Length: 122
Image 1 (cartoon, rainbow, N blue to C red):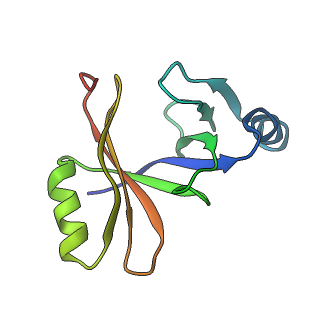
Image 2: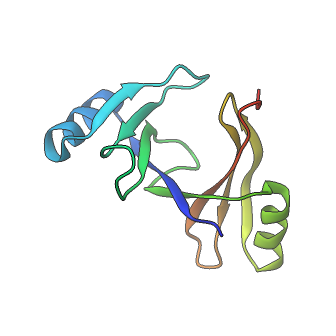
């Protein structure tokens, strides 16, 4: 089942957005040591209901909040998106040490992400 496991909030000023969410909700915001500018967001204690997320720069693809669902097989999930009338916007790409990610649009034009966990992703 493709449970929502992560959210992304685009921002023009990542640090300002991070401070906003820290102040308003008490979330923890920290930098990510990956290949792109990205802030990791913790929304609560481990083991409690809810999901964590990230803040990334606005870009040509991510213009609004994006929810990401977990999938066991990203390639098969991408095939199901296409077969169901959706569109693949950015296909399989590695997230080093985390897994493989893709961005798609549903039949209504809404952007969403899918993530296949694989700590060996490089």
